[in-house]
Image (cartoon, rainbow, N blue to C red; front, side, top):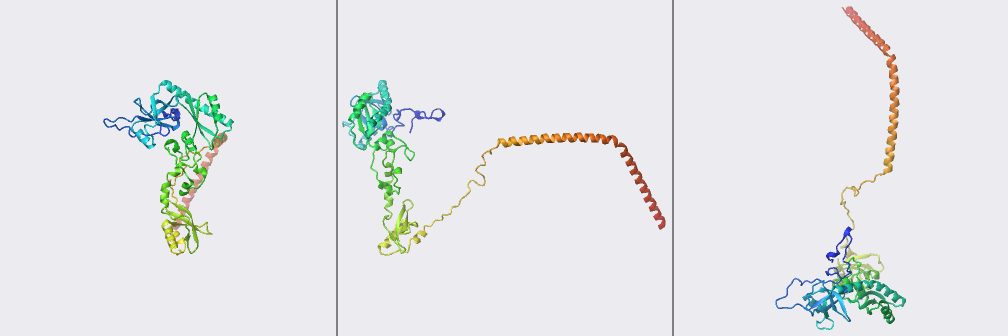
Length: 441
């Protein structure tokens, strides 16, 4: 829940109204109430309800009479009756829903607890109220130092100034009774104001200060929970939770209130189960219950002496065995019933992604040093080849010139000799062929 002023600012950082639980729009405060009757008009001739609900620091709320018939709406800052002086608060609820809340909390309209609303707060009232609120944090630090110096077994958790700054209420927690007469004298001398000490419980302290629970959400006692019911360790036993005080305790040091939320559902579910202390008698031995699964409806039993081997059976089978034992009959063993609930524990894994690699979109990391070494090697090889080619060209050019100058004559003489040899051979062949023909004739 947040109002428009609690949006994010530059660079995504939260802006915030910096009112610390006293938001004027009543959208981000503690113990807020949604007025679901605000859009409904009253019947003709009916007068609106004269009482309003006003919220003060850290979720403290009270009902007040609107005797002056002021036109009040949710979020208005008003000055109310206090003893002595006046207090300043914010209207959190108006209309017929206030009547419902007063009836729920058993507050009578004509009782002395319901005081008056004086007026809407002026700018002067708001300035005094804000100045007194700014003093609270420094006073709390100084008050804790004084309490430690006096060696008092108490913890000052919060300080709340009255709207006119004439009185400061100190909220503290203590396990035993504390004699703070000397403490009040030093507080009055140190802070120069009227002092009121009010002891609260550990759960009320957590509700006033607020925080984040182990579930990741805001504390129930500081957002919507108003009645604190007693919580026992039996609630954890019914829900099959380990009795670890570090996990079961909340920020107040007591057992978590959320242990009671689902307790009735667990108790109703356990009524269909046999009692865990009943033993099953079989021919193989006596079996004792080790574990219960409330959601799936299974029980685990182990034979006496074989505590490591558990046998899972259903509630119907357990009741059947108990009924047989009541008739002085024994079952052969729990293995027969457990075999029906045997599950295939083999896991068939499938390649959801396919044959592609998960790193196929990642860019390969190139080593700059390797690139430099490769470039150096390429450059040196190129220079060496260029030198070799230039040297070979020079040597070939000189030799060719020498050969061209002195080999023109012998080439021509050799070719002439070859041609004369060919013609003489041809003539000899022709003469031989003629002689042969003459001999035949």
